[in-house]
Image 1 (cartoon, one colour):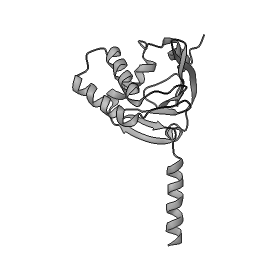
Image 2 (cartoon, rainbow, N blue to C red; image 1 turned 45 degrees about the vertical axis):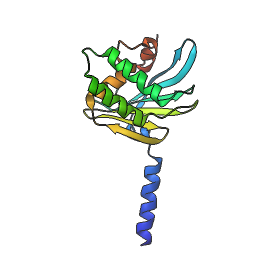
Image 3 (tube, helix red, strand yellow; image 1 turned 180 degrees about the vertical axis):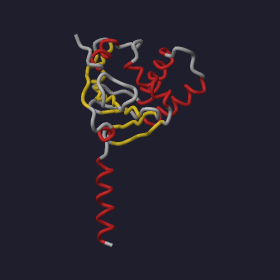
Length: 170
């Protein structure tokens, strides 16, 4: 009985300390940079990848450390707006609504110092973390590509940050 209890405590300890880094254990920092609007820094972004240059056939993670307070609804609204803007073809409104609702479930309000991370799961989707806690996983490769495109697509609104994330600094 003691052995079972000890094993349960060990399993709990391992799962309690699991975070986004465990999903990309062999990844290295590719690049990082700040995202600012009107001179106000909103967050620091880092891109970690198992392969460099970035390859959508390997896991990678986007890690954000916030410098400002932002409501979770604002994060989801802005994300959907950017996904819609970058789409090569119109995305069905019911799909955008579903994605928005799912984003609302994983994005809470953030305060300065809070960390949000997203791990790209090739062929599967994306897993989200708040700090060291997993907040959700979407088994939707189309959503995953669109979501990471907010930062990594050539049509991003933050081309300088994209260059820094991809390690293409001048």
